[in-house]
Image (tube, rainbow, N blue to C red; front, side, top):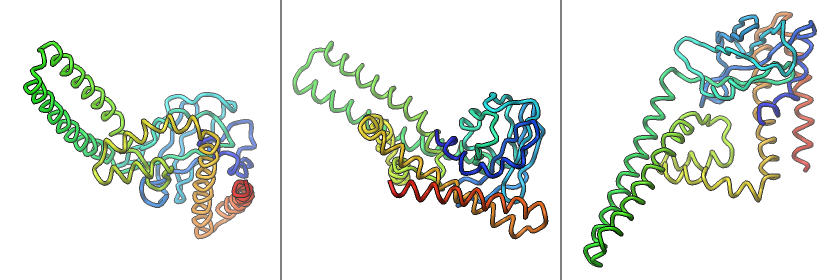
Length: 276
């Protein structure tokens, strides 16, 4: 949803794709760096003309044989020494000249290192909890002289609960490792505050419980998501505009003019959102 909300603000660049083809537009930024642009990122798509990001992190990928809405295949984005953070989002790209796509990168190995750190913190916590509850079961059995069948049933339930938590941990450890602090939602901000304190279980609980909350606050959540997307896009456009103005030259000036027009449209949308 959010990637489509980025689209209308960038329609001013459509002038560059007037020929009978789709021109995919996007920007590459570094994770957790205040949207620092990444230059020299190679973007390749099956049926497209390979391209590189410029100093502003911007890329324009020509798709001469595609129409708007066509699915993209074999998307390859690479930069020596770096890896893609938002790979799942990238894999959902479609041919469009109206969407500003975003590629978030980080130093190679960072995701696995962070994932392993979060996983080990959570695993240590769950193992301690398992041992504590197991000891409680043993003490209760001795004091109450519970029968072996009841004890084994409770042991089985405890093991199932532990296995379930470990599966969730495996999923969320990777999710937490890929959260970009430059654009946190309210829920992600709350979860990351707990993650940084080492409370992985508490952070997972926030995500698991959010489904219930969303049933009652769906409209407000959509509005907040739209505002956040507009803020992010506005910031990215301003960043690119500053780079092109410093770069100079006729091509950069032309791009700067188009960005100013796109930024003006975005400012109008943002003002309307804040009035609601």
